[in-house]
Structure formats: structure tokens, C-alpha cells
Length: 484
Ligand code: URA
Image (cartoon, rainbow, N blue to C red; front, side, top):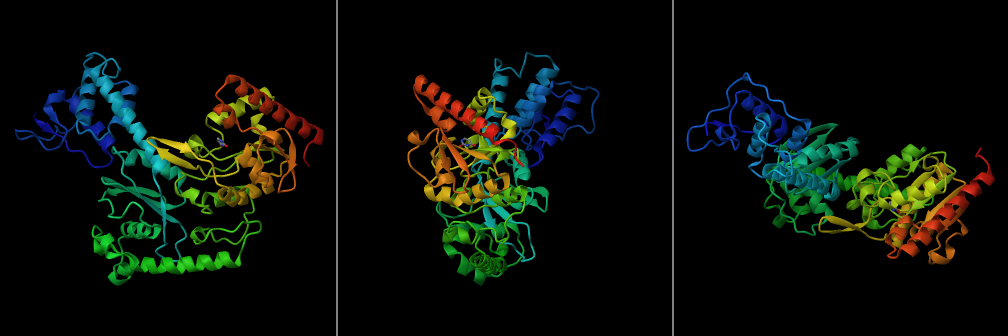
């Protein structure tokens, strides 16, 4: 082995691609390059300067595969990719095919990276940090995560899109991503904080506050905030007690604000979440403002594990509003209601009933996904009656802005959220009740309940009933005439 390449801890794909292009342009064979950057038994040289005379042409599929495999944790990844590049260049079989041992290995690596990124998007759990200065208006969040592969860098774009109006940090053992004032940067990773599994929010917040902004040091305040046994892994030079003092003042301000400015129609909020609620005493004035406010919602604990608030979507002037239970796995990741399997069934039935889906407003009674992790999956859990009641605040706002002539309650959760009546759904299906907002609510099956039916006959019957109810809703709207 005569050449050694050392790649940076981030920006690895561009760096590998440049090095590989240079190496192939000098016609270096795979066995001549040590990608670990350490050199072999013999003194290793850096790659030759500048480009050589040969230019390799590779299919776009290789660039795509390499752009994924590069984030795998296998130390052999750079060499394997170069071997594939070299074979493509020399037309030695098809190293991208599943039938080729190298192709199979690379494809498996790409799949593992994809799964790892998906897990990160689903399971990163942000904690809000106190603002370092009272004048700071951007909210700050931080999370600790341990990906299996080097996926923080490719996975960060998702968080930039989702949380572009906040400052946030995701710390991992290898790398830390920080999004500060609209700019994403990468910094070295760190050791896992020495906190117990069930560490309280304030311990986590203190830990993150320390590494978010290594600015000021005052140990006494730190000692009083976090028991000493928890900070043996924390470099004391990074403690920021002034931030902690600010946090207290901020929480007190928030508590005062929420105590003196109760929102009309809001149910009592548990003490634990009251301090974290948005303090704006005014009601949102537009649907867009309501959605932006809902994105910050902390009225119940569901916001802690869900990826995001899933607000309604569709026609803001809709005469018909369809309310489901809560977002599922897909909806939670995509941020839109009814984009998963139940949504597909609902859209099929709407089409069958000749209802144009683009004319309705689709939403859910509960705006965060409630789930329990099971292996790689997140299993749906029914929202509790308290969670439904907390979220009714947002449903009422949606009703107030959309002002539908008729609401279709899909399933028992939606029916309870809309009417306050939690009687079993079966006898109520197909009937119209009066909603808490004063308007008519037609009660029907939830599409997910149809999908859960084991026998085809029940499935078909329930689907036909949902289709009939949607047709009834259509008829009611047409007899009511156009809205003013
Ligand atoms: N089920 C629901 O109730 N809502 C969705 O958005 C998706 C599935």
C-alpha cells in the first residue's frame, strides 16, 4: 500500500469523492490506497497532487449509493466504494448489482444508513433550554442521540427544515450539529452525559445548556442546580449558572403570564406543562398564526416524543371538515394528516363517493402522534381523555377559522373531541349530533378501524357505510347551498 488518505470527521462525502476522483485519475488500484489515513507497514505517501490524465465516468446510481454508504460506520466503507468505482471504470462486472458480492454488501450498508436516519428523525427527543439572555427571542432546544452510523450529518437537513425558526443542537458521540441563528455547523461529539435513564427535564436542560454555549462559569449555582454526582463527566469550565438563574426568572414570568391571561375555552393545564406553555396572551388572528402557535404546543406530554405537531391541511374555506384521531407514524414524520395507509383508504372512499379531497379540511382531534417504541417500530397508542381535552383547544381554533358547515367525525376519539360524548360509536354511526362548537357533526367509522377488521365482509360493510356517510355529508352540503 503506498498512499494514505485521511478524511475529515464531517464533509466526508465531498472529501472522499474528491480523493477518489484524484486517485482514479492517476490510475491507482484499490490495493494501493489506505483509506484509514494511518498508512500501512511502509511509509505511506499522500495522494499525488492535482488530477491525472484519466477521467472515470460512473453511473448516477453509483454516486447515489456512495452518498449513502459513506455514512456507514464500517471502517472499510471508503475502500469498498473505491473498489466499486475502480471496477466500474474497468468494466469488471457490475459492482452495483445485488447479484455481485460487493454490490450486495454496499446495498445492505446503504439500507442500514437509511434506517438509521429514519430512526434519528423519529426518536430524537429535544428538550427546551432556557434563553441565555432575556432579549433572546429564538427558542433553543437540544437533544442527545446515539446513532449506529455516522448519520447526524445527512440526517440534519430534516431538522433544519422542521425547526428553521429555532436554535437547536443534537449531540452525538462522534459529532455535534448546531443550528444557530439559521446556520448549521458541525463540531466534535462528546461523551454521553452521566445522567440516569430517568433523569429529570431540568438535569438534561442543565447538561445541554452547558454544552450549547460554553460561556460563563460560576460553580456554586451549578452545584445547587445539579447534584454533584451527575457532573463528573461535565467539564466544569463549561458551566453556565447565570443561564440557570435566567431560567428561573423566565419560568416565573411565564407562570405569571399564564395565570393572569387564561385563554378563552382552554381546559386546565397540568402544572408540569404550564411553565412551558407559550405565553402570548393573545389569540392567534389567522389560521397560519394558529398553526405556528400549535407547532410550539406543550399542553400535554405528547409533544415530548412526537416529531412535530401535525396541523390540519386542505382548503381553508372548506364547507366540510373531516376530523380523525391523531397522526400516525407517517403523518408524524411528514407533518401532514392522513398520508399513511388509513389516509389512503380515506382518499379512496372519498373518490368513490365523488368527493373532491382538495375541497375539504382534513385534521385530527389530537395533533401529536402517541406511540410506544417496539424495536424499530413505533406502535400507535390511543390518546387519553385528558390528552384529547387538552388538544380540543386547537380543534376549536381550527373550527373557528375554517367555519365548516358540517364536520365528519371519523371514529370515537374525534366524536368525543367534537361533541363531548364518549358513548360507543356503533349505535351513533350515521347520525348527526351537535358539536361543542354549536354546529352539526356526522359520526362515522375511522378508516383505520376498517383496516383493522380481520374478515373481509366486516371490512367491506364498514367501508360501504363510510362511503354512504360521506355521500350523506355531500348531500347535506349541496342542500345547504354555497357559503357566504
Ligand atoms: N389516523 C388518523 O386519525 N389521522 C391521521 O392523520 C392518520 C391516521
